Image (cartoon, rainbow, N blue to C red; front, side, top):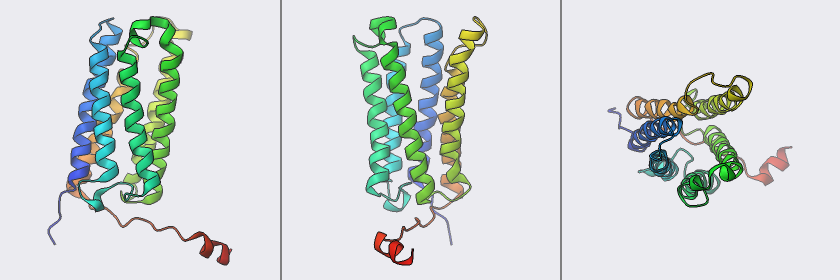
Length: 206
């Protein structure tokens, strides 16, 4: 049987690669003190939101990484909406233009994004539309990104002047996930989603 390209995973992967390119450019611009980092970050957020929509709904129902289940879709769409809203806020007068006063809010926004991303990765893993072991990639990538974010937050404190521009390496991670997604789109087919037992059945057999 001739296999069919999983277009949702291909398009979503391309969007993630684009988001990563803009994210790296934004991190470099931030390190150079250039205001261009703001529109670049906003563009990256738009691509993130687009990728979340594509992965959540799927261009075809079977291609949704969460099987179009309400809880999984809510998490992915919420992640995309939050990332975009945070970028819009950062581009406004109370964000980047406010200077150091906006840092606590920006940091809370990053933490909230990680929490939503972890929830989305767990939903993808539990539902199982992406075949194993590939379904572990989102959560592994988030863990790596979180680890790098912590390192880059600590290094300037313990060793001022050490290391390169903050945020460059973490910004490359979505691009790696996007490349894997694009490769899976032409080499792998969506797996049947796992079905959870009704609560009453679970209680009866418990």
